[in-house]
Every structure is written in C-alpha cells, then in structure tokens.
Image 1: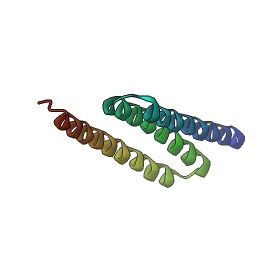
Image 2 (image 1 turned 60 degrees about the horizontal axis):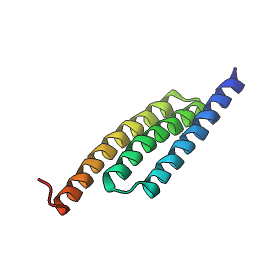
Image 3 (image 1 turned 30 degrees about the vertical axis):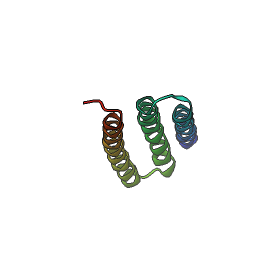
Length: 97
C-alpha cells in the first residue's frame, strides 16, 4: 500500500512539473499580456496544486497536507488578483476604458 501512495505522489509531482513547464512555455510564446497571464494563472495553479498534493502524499502527514492545501488556496487568490491588476494596467496603457 505504501508503494502505491509513493508512486501516486511521484506521479503528481511529475505532473505538476509538467504543468509548470507548459505555463512557462505559454509565457514565452503567447503574443500579448492577457494571453500570457491566462497561461500562467491556469497552468501554474494546476501545477502547484498537483505538486503540493504529491508532496503531501509523500510526507504522509495530515497536518502537512492541511498547511500545503492552505498554501495552494492562498496562491490561487494571489494569482487571480495579480493577473487582474496587471491586465488593468495594460488596458490603461493602451487607452482602453
């Protein structure tokens, strides 16, 4: 049973790293700021969630899982707020209302 949990944790960590890589490629390849922010907020938030879920499985502690879950929720809020602020700054620079 422990081997299955470790394998699932490792798969989640690798999947999270994949989504972080996809978000970084979106940041590099997309043409405008809004597309780049979309790639970062979606892929990186999913990647962070998978990464923290995998780490909590590997640690095997409910306390660590709760702290990592709270960290993910706070990161979700921070990413959405920062993306909203950055898109508003870009809209003002382009003269949009």
